[in-house]
Image 1 (cartoon, one colour):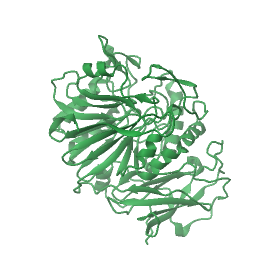
Image 2: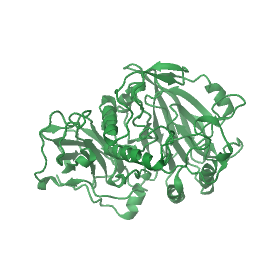
Image 3: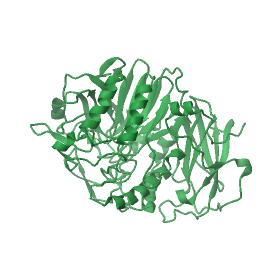
Image 4: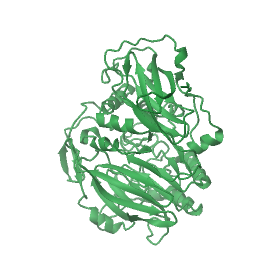
Length: 533
């Protein structure tokens, strides 16, 4: 056995750029053989109640995460203000007979005693097991795979897509099933928590009626860091969510509910002054970092957090993870579901911001992978939301940012990327459709395929289709599927085919929901247009 220090990463600048596009950083860790005697370790209860997780897979390693919280919902979460040493191990086998890396990380009170260890020196494209120990306690054992070497031949990639997990609307049964899938990684598109306070009823877009809240954390809407920490703690204690984290490395990014519904840059729907809203953003950003398996390069600077980044999987896939919240112009036309106003053609409006957009365009142009993916939050395809003469748009999507969308689609067309797949969430429904160069011209060429994955629980039980789904399909012929059930998606990618399986549950309002495959769609390189598989 050899001891491998988790940082600095032993990658060249070229390898780093290929692997993720993120900035390499030093982990908060010290080698176990020189452990200092700092902090107390007499816990009032089991310290790993929030579980463990792995994330951001690179060819030579990934991040492993935990957060010490013996009493997660108490004001001090059962912890002192000391810096606490946390031992960690990585092995090739689940019994830890072949330990290939180990060390001791520092759990700092400034980060809520969260631990982020950036592993390096592991072998590419293979599974590992990991665990933590502290104060005589051991965590559960997690499993994660390193990414294949960027540019190396890769025959197949299989990963999950999930998000939108509203605790109040239902059980996280989908995560129980997701944990049983044999996956290379999971892409979580956002809405990991929901920020609203307790309400006994919620509106179901399927039944078009008020439905009873399924369960509740009984917490008020968070504004401070401590309040956001307690919200994450309530979610993190869900056993199904913990199982899904233990089963595979996650690539995570936020959407709106990690801060507040439909926020964009320095704007919220309530008209809070920007300088005050940034204080709430700062609290939310820190809480998000504290609870996700992110690299040190994502430690927030006040309200700003680096979340857009690139991951390379052999010569098969370049995945560009986008942040469609932090840099976006305020939603035009007063937000919501309504007809578009003239402001949607304002060339100054942006979804990605200038820096992120240039980063994305440069990466797309330089990519040599078989497939390119935009892993993001809000629907790129246009969509008329109501059958009939009224042209109703969801103004929190790309739809009202028409000039910015046109730039992106023109770039995809001009660089010849005919193998682009957009992975989206937010809608609480499954969609599959074609992204056309001229979105409102059905005769325009297809430049990408978009798959929108439904929610884990947001929206409640739902059903096969909302009442207006058939009319929407007629008015949006580029869209091939609309489904309103809860679940997740599995992407099976080879050089010849990208296939997605939309897996859905019959219910989330009670435990024990049954999983089934609602629909499978596929797209082939050089053959534009999504088809049923």
